View 1 (spheres, rainbow, N blue to C red):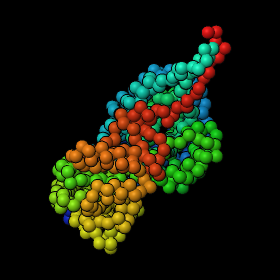
View 2 (view 1 turned 45 degrees about the vertical axis):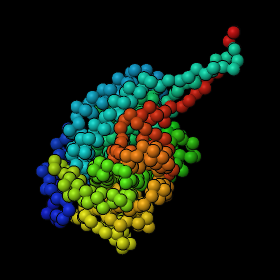
View 3 (view 1 turned 180 degrees about the vertical axis):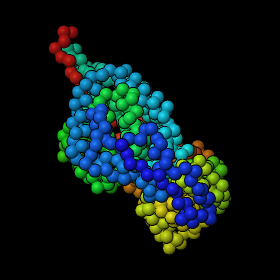
View 4 (view 1 turned 60 degrees about the vertical axis):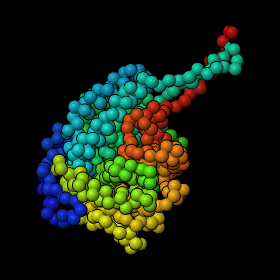
Length: 515
Ligand code: SIN
């Protein structure tokens, strides 16, 4: 099936950082993946495990060593998957909402049953610390749970008619085949969030997982099959970086595809939107963020420090909703910086994801670490001070870094970081903070800390964002709508709104009635 190689983690080649402890791996990610019963390395199309002419390597981001080789699907395999999903749609859309609900529930149960194995796969391919991987599996499963319930709550309307001989009805119907293109930072949960909604609505799907993290997607396929989800309803076409453009083209242009749901960079989202335009496909886009984190003078500083730690360092800073720009009001600035520095020292442990002590892992690849290091260099050259960390370590490891005296002209205040960099700017007035926070094309998430109720309402309303955390640093949950405004995307995932993105509204006029 797969060719697996044991990897030895060469932590010795990494320098031990001054401000965070780098821990030795207990057991390497690839050895864990190797023993995982859910390891699958072929594509999954029409209920069958599909080979491809070649295979591509999946690497442990901590070491660069190969974890598995996975079938490198191309446009031909992608087309097979679209055709299978289209064929399956004919019968899947006819199933009852209750039937779909029960299947999603079985899938949820199996994911929870296998959560440890799924978490090990996530860590092996994304580098995420095990406790975060486990959290991701449970978070992802919560969407299957949620949408198994929402499947039964898709209501239409009966509209009061202006004529006595007519009845006006609104039906909700599944849009059809959905192409699901998912990122590496949540290799399991982003699939569950999208596919849970799609299947609940009666759509069928073709998933293209990120090139770096196909193993979680294939493990989910294995469990979907075990749950009894019919052939062709859930298909997975893994592929390499080289094949991604041609596979993506099939998924975004084939006339049999009705809908595209994508999570990833804004630049890629724009390309997919252009491709979708020719056949006027429905789209959901979860794109980049640039989250502000504002601490007002009235805040509870200890709580703000806790929120900053949680929001910034979740997944080593690699989430679209991670705080990117910290704005702290003058009066509490010094106290906040001191407490934050202490929290970073006490709580952050950089190491291999498979070490139970690690709270931060490697970034996804060396380029990602270099991007963060460049932002640090740029900030320092413009007058920022490094209070903690600041160094790029071996491979894709980057020290968690705290910068003071940050100004708006620095790169870290203009572009998404996607890494463990925490730049702090001092501000004086609420108006100034709002102007800085809103001066961005991105509008996904943001956070602020205040204990002044009038200020809470004012600021929450004024922030140009899809998600606002008030006195909370982590707000994602299956029950709430996830999505952004401006160039952060289109549509919402999770919540009662998420399923609507997979439904068409049909107006039916029933005429000729005898009053
Ligand atoms: C993301 O980073 O794309 C998702 C984060 C979340 O669901 O909280």
